[in-house]
Image (cartoon, rainbow, N blue to C red; front, top):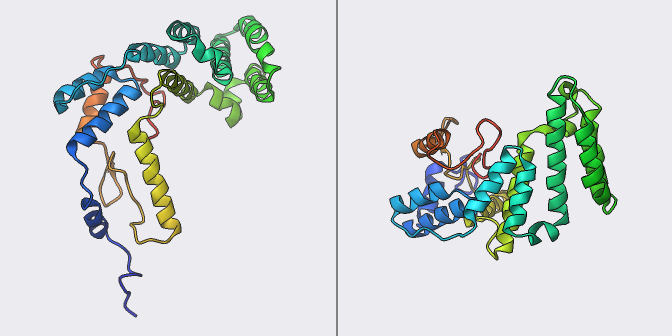
Length: 269
């Protein structure tokens, strides 16, 4: 029996034809990109993009401070990050107990990292810090106590034989997670949107695709979001612009990024 249009497998050409019917203006797209760069703290890229796109650079008085705080967290210098946050706005950590605890816990993790990576490393600094800075806060919330106990377990088990839960504490991805939370907290205090509009659109697109599949709509089996060039044979190719930006960052001409430490934006990875 021949398949009817309603049961036939949809083709990319059919789907892309529908997509092409919606044509956002280049100006709107440029402002979305600018919003993403400023919100996520990439001033050098934003400045260059403003020139290339011939649009006005969006003002953000605290962007350089946000970059410095992010860089400090990414490099493991949590004490410096906390000092810079308090210099920018002491109310950020005063009003965010969970975020403050997360930063202090990350600082403890960095002390433990130094200890276990050094032969016969002294654990006293880590224990003293846990007792003075984290233990008093851990009594105020059960989750804090659980997190503290889990973190101190890093001192007990061999670093080369940790459970996935404990190993994740030493993964650089935790630094990025905390840095993102700090960036969002700063933006909220500035009465700004804590997430870039482009990221919200991507989330909305994923939500729409999920709903469409649940409703068994005729859409291709696999959809990319256009940020990675994808051929129909399943291979992925980063665009030349992406490679140029990565090269600039690694050569010191672009914004500070983490190299080979899992600092991929989940929106585009």
